[in-house]
Image 1 (cartoon, rainbow, N blue to C red):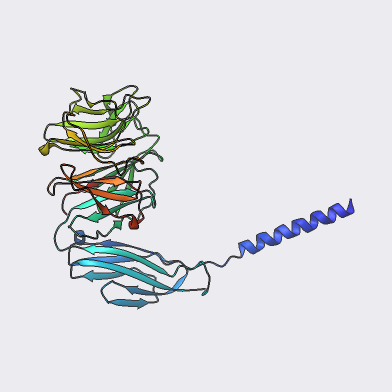
Image 2: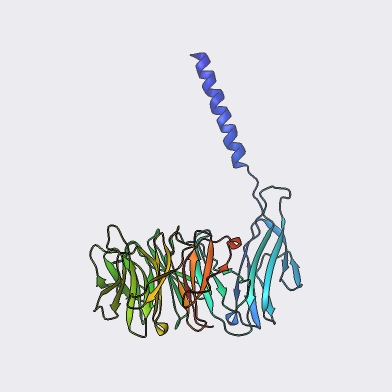
Amino acid sequence: MRILFLTYIILVFTVSCDVQEINQTVPSTQAKFSYTISNNSIAPARAVFINQSINAQGYLWKFGNGDTLYTLSSDSVIYTYEQAGTYTIRLEVEPTTPDLYYNNLVAEKTIVINDIPVKRLYFADRNEGKVKYVVLDNNLLPVIEEFESATLNKPYGMDMDTLTGKLYVTDYAEQLLNRFDWDGQRQEILMNSNSELFNSPIGIAVIGNKIYWGEPGGIHRADLDGLNPEIFLDMPNEYPQDIAYDPLNQAIYFTNNLNPESGGVWRVDVDGTNLTNVVKDVWGGAIEVLPDSNYVYYYVAYEGMYIAELNGDNPRLFDASNAGKWAWGMAVDKEAGKIYYPNRVDGTIMKADANGSNVEIFIPAEADINPNAMTIDKAR
C-alpha cells in the first residue's frame, strides 16, 4: 500500500509540473492590420491603416510606393494616395520577446486605387471564409482584395443590391443571411436558424425591394432588411438551388436539386405564375441569365457548364473542366459580354464570352482560393 501511495504522489507531481510549464508560455508578437479607403478607392483616396498587432513595440509602415513611416505608437496610420495604382502595404513590427519561433513580424495587404469608377467581381473564398473581390479593369493579373470579416463556412448564395451597395451572402452551414457594405466595412446578420421561413438557404437574388432565396420546399422572400418573410413559390418535395432574375421578361430562373427531388432548370413569372420546367432531369447548381441575348447558363452536376436559350432549347456543354466539383455562383458582365464562374476542381475562376466561347482562366490556381458564390456590382 505504501509503494502504491508514493507512486500516486509522484505521478500527480509530474503532471502538475507539466501543466505549470504550459501555463508559462511566453506571449508571441503578431503583426496584423486592416484598412479603410475613402472616395470609393478612387484617387485621391485616404487610407486608414488600423494597427491590430499584438505584443509589438515598434512599427515600420511601408506604403507600397517608396514612402515609409516608423513609429513607436500602435495607433492607426493615415496615408493619402494621390495617384491610381496597385500598392502592397507592408507592416514590420519589433517583438517584445525576440527569437520566439512563433513570432509573426510581418503583415502585408494589397490595395487598388482607381482613377475612375469601376465594376467589381465579388466571390466567396471557402479557404479563408471571406468575401473577396477583383476590379474588372482588363488587368491581365487581377489583384484580389478582401473583406476583413472571415466568418463564412458554406457561402453558396451571393447577390448585390446595386441601388444601395449592399452585398447579400447566404451561409448554408451556419444557417445565416449576411449583409455587407459593398466595401466590406460593415457586416450584419439579417436572418438565422431561428428566423421564420428560413431554413438551409442556397442561392439568393435581389429583386426590387425583396431578397429571394431557395430552400427545401420552395422559394421564400423577405424585405431587404430580412423582415416580413413569406413564401413566394411553394414547391413541396423540391429544393430550389441557385436563383437568377430576368428583368427583361420579368421572370425568375432557378435550378433544382435531383434525387430525391425532380431536378431541372425552372422558370416562373415574378408574380409567382406560369411555373415551367424548361430543362428537365438535370442536377442543377449555379445559374445566370443574359436576357438580351436569350441565354441561360447553368451548372449540371458531374458534367459542367451549360448554355441554352431562355426557353431551354438547344442546351450545349461549353466547359467540362469543373465537372468534378459543384459550382455555386456565376456572374454575367452584360456590358463586357463576359460570364464568370468558379472551377473548384482547379481552384480557379473562369471567364468566357457570352456565347460560351473563348473559355479561359481568369484567376489562376496560384491565388490559392476555393471560389463559391459570386456576383458583379455596377461601377462605383
